[in-house]
Length: 105
Image (cartoon, rainbow, N blue to C red):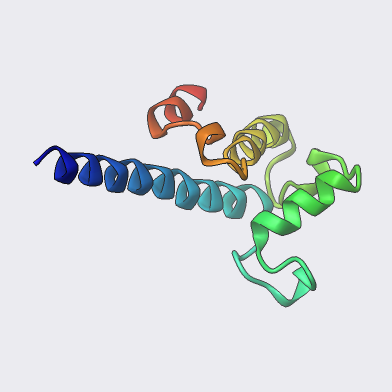
């Protein structure tokens, strides 16, 4: 019985991490105005890889923000994009919980 509970806990933990992943993709879409998959990304297969590559190449976060966002809200958009990037940790243990992401927002 303990094994079953452990297995269920692992599944639940994975699902919560997946929820954070999905939420991160949505945040990136909202803040950049880009679709999750786009031919523009070329070798970067999706929006997450595209944003990461831009950051690696020292592109300013403000330049990644959708140009249609009102100028007075661009800094807020950058903060939300930073949270989304924070959730892109490749190591699952470093991905913040859903609760923590909501708190950061």
